[in-house]
Length: 438
Ligand SMILES: *[C@@H]1O[C@H](CO)[C@@H](O)[C@H](O)[C@H]1NC(C)=O
Ligand SMILES: *[C@@H]1O[C@H](CO)[C@@H](O)[C@H](O)[C@H]1NC(C)=O
Ligand SMILES: *[C@@H]1O[C@H](CO)[C@@H](O)[C@H](O)[C@H]1NC(C)=O
Image 1: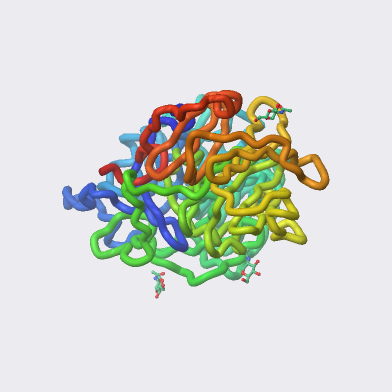
Image 2 (image 1 turned 60 degrees about the vertical axis):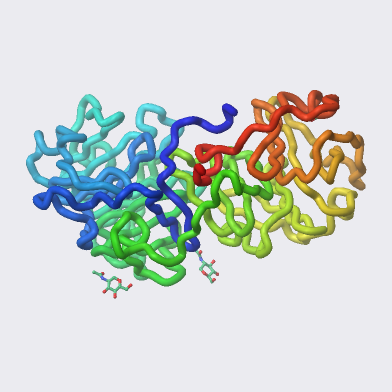
């Protein structure tokens, strides 16, 4: 099934409030060479950034750690010139550029050392670097403490947030202008990191999650980084969500919204399947859709909305950086879609052109509902040779109907509506859903 790429690091998992990478069986290989620093001792990092592949690097002095597990190594083994040219022995700050309008810079890692900036792509220093910081980032001071990117949907514009002491310098990538702020709720950050659309300020061996627009801190912080961002013996207990075995998998719903975010829902959790390059992680559904305290039966996306069905209620959320419940919702299934009874799954195929027909699976039948008609009525009802479908999803490769730990693939809706015999089921794998292989 092509929808799921084959590359994936299946070492990470789920959590309840912050993302907790969880070691899946590999030994926590932190120690080993005693001459190397051990991040489980409680380290204050100089910089943290993902690279273009989503691998997260933690920097301290002349060393770095690659990913959430494993021992330290010398930084100049991977980013040679950092040490060669400058000989400073540490980076002040680093971030991964998010600038889709400028593919020449997008996904490059920027390192800041004293008054210089280095740009790397694919672990190679770009021509012309290092430069003076102000040549690339006019108005941004030298000797920074931390930096983190903030893409447009999460900040008002594609930006980089720089930290120096208690000053925050928000740099607008397009206009090349800087606004200086102070965020009294945040301690002085020695490194900052965006991960899975959340923003973390690291200070000492602790971290604090913050809002990248207001600097607001919500929840109980600081937290110890060793409980969440690395795998350390004796840390990270509590709050872990153990992913089910693939053979025991049971989805409730799957959808891809108009911004390309691909979600799966199972019980109280959801997972972003398109963010695989940052690992697969589960979060409570209520963290994103706070009204859905009992999970979902079916979900589909239409235009800039996501429709979530639970029992006889339909919740419609507007898609943006955050999902907001549309006023007047939830409404009943009857009111919103003109149907009654339990919904097993729903999907809408918008791959090649805008389609206004949602397909709702109830038992052994698929109902088609035209979302432009008022009142909504079922335009078509077809029988399927399957029942008890848990979830359905449509993309450019076709339609998948999920049932327990298996799924049925149809290339087109026409085949789904004409086949009298179900195709052979295929097994859900760990690379698809982050479940555990048996
Ligand atoms: C880390 O946070 C804890 C509270 O969670 C606090 O007691 C401790 O002093 C902090 N340590 C450092 C080094 O910031
Ligand atoms: C922080 O929490 C308060 C109270 O729950 C809420 O009103 C506010 O929107 C939250 N702010 C952010 C940035 O999440
Ligand atoms: C929408 O999709 C349905 C089946 O999925 C199909 O019958 C219909 O022709 C499509 N409409 C458009 C406008 O493509």
